[in-house]
Image 1 (cartoon, helix red, strand yellow):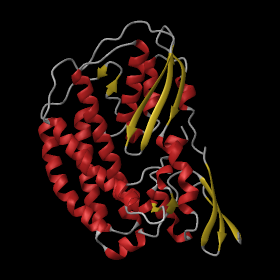
Image 2: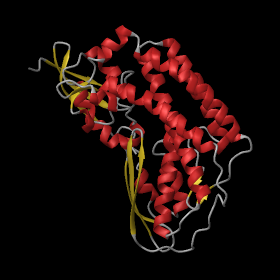
Image 3: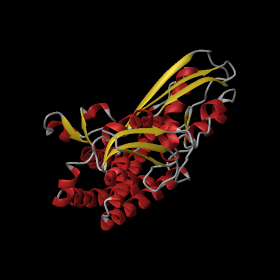
Image 4: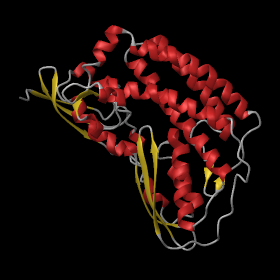
Length: 337
């Protein structure tokens, strides 16, 4: 039974960005929730139309600047499919390194924000220290900390900076050692753990964003705590991504880091997708014969994540709203593109 309605936004410290949240309350419990978006829409897809694919890529990367490596990779692979070009092993290797760096950066951002929401100050600063060092490495690779424009159709703008592989491997060794302690502090603080078990409980959590495999296997009566599961998933992802990166940097495939593209393309529609720790990125793209963008449609992880707001908030206390919203890893720049 709804006793009162509360409206939060479009700008509020509890919200991940400009949005409006309407809540139907019964006492201090949330019984209904609806979200409104579009307060910072930029019309990115429409601004790309009619532009040469190289010029259009600048707009595409701005959908989510912190995921620019992933966006540039997705866009490059879509263009290469449209012009029917295959790239070599070194290009694929460079793209995988860049993608994994982006994934790790996003997970560290997520963990630091969750530690901040829970008031775990020591963890917050410890994670931020590692993230700043990782951003230094990303800048060494691409020349920028965000919005990189490093991966382009046909390959990369330039090859690896001298000494990058050694510095990355040294950082990974230190990070993996410290990440074990960070995971212990997150998982073995009993009052914290007890609170996590009761936050953001949803039925069949696999439908809403990403949940950790361990949380699904240990669930009771089909219920999953979205907050706990997403936190465990992020901790597991950091270990998996770091281990994968260590194996990657020890390789060094030969070949060109950039391949030429034909001067004209077929007028065909291509679809490309890319998996990430936050969800799938998808793009449908058509280039005309002069390499101009004729049609484009993008689907981001947040297009799916935003549908989990009500299931995660239903039946929860209002004071837990900021933590639950933070746990969803929703990016408003993806929604308001």
